[in-house]
Length: 402
Ligand code: ATP
Ligand code: MG
Image (cartoon, rainbow, N blue to C red):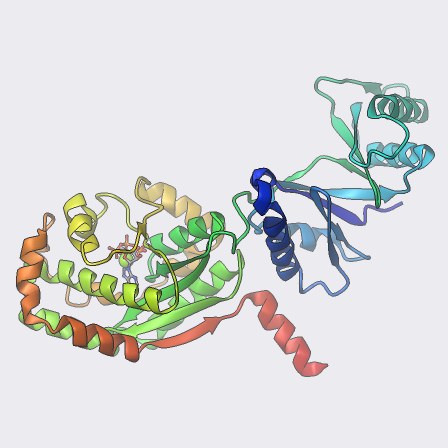
């Protein structure tokens, strides 16, 4: 006997009514993508569950890969047996032995396949009784706080027996909520914002402003590495690299220093809006947190937000920096974010940025900038690279050799 299956439960998407089938298909697609490096592994959809067949693949690496897939509520290693009582009994006894040192247990049966002739109450008794007879004297049933809960699910394709579960990443399957353009710097915050947006089911494209030669290749590589880290939670990511040197030098020359930062941000926002609109993307996301720095006061947000009609999603808006740092560590972006690099926003950073910039003030100074032409040129000169997920990159290498 061998636990050669993984039973996947999905929470939130179970309640989505008519859209449910679409959601399930997306989740299956994303699970397949996440597991595509495991050649023999198969992913199948049954009623209300997704089943992974391991076909001999070690489960440790598969369960690890599943931990990153949004839309999964929980998942369990499962033993699949025939829809026969004796097979269920033997399977349950096997599962108790697997749960080393378990002294107490409980059997919970779910008869998802109604044509199966025996009801779940009877199955609980039949299976539980058998397990008791087969175990040492010390083992007993505890229906309230058992050491091991043996779950028996009778489905059309077979009966799946599990004991215990891994926690899933929850959220919604990436792709269910459309696309968001993430403003990705090389800092700690914006990758976290990207992760949170993906968790709500949105695919992301990323936009990054850089100012060569003031920012170097390494800074660009860093942003690409951050985007790649995010692909492990979803699909490939298009990264738009916008040349920002000219705009910044121009602003530095023409705009009073206390409004430089505000106007630079407004330009970024305008360019992001154009790129989003060109690609049918309906929202922009940033890693801003209320009050963190001068550019993130309410007055700043208000003045910067004026130039776009797209919703600007700020998932970190209420978070403390320490919480963001812990989150970044957990999702694997922190170590990349703390590498030294030059941020284009800080290269000419004036010491006297206004913490309360006004819309009228910004508009007055922007008369010195050819907004339309400048933004259009930046968009034209934008370089777009597709950051492939690790899985996809490995599959491509395999193809080369096949
Ligand atoms: P982060 O850690 O994400 O860089 P931060 O706390 O350093 O954030 P800022 O540098 O003020 O804050 O940036 C606020 C937000 O503006 C960032 O989270 C990001 O979404 C966006 N942003 C800043 N710099 C860039 C850039 N060079 N390219 C794209 N987006 C940027
Ligand atoms: Mg920053």
